[in-house]
Length: 130
Ligand SMILES: [Zn+2]
Image (cartoon, rainbow, N blue to C red; front, side, top):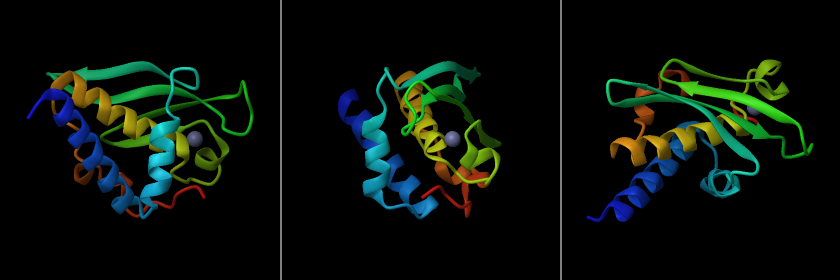
């Protein structure tokens, strides 16, 4: 399998797993996947240890308020975002989902291994933003 195909397969599998684990429709996950563009979502830090990508920190622009940025980090032990949905309501917000998708892509590109959703115990049965 070529590396482009491996990347595509790794991304596809991750999006399906993410949809299943969060109980969020795949179409919504795909909308977020395709919304990730450099103008509106920037990687601030990639956390690496012993050849593994352990998480990312990002700034993601608000979808409703232009010029308002939310700061989000994801890793093996949890996720945090500065938006209201996460800080006040404790929900898995769209920014966290975007950061998870980005973390998986960075990991696939840098190491050839994607993020194992099953290993993210904190992600299971968490309510998500509408
Ligand atoms: Zn958020």
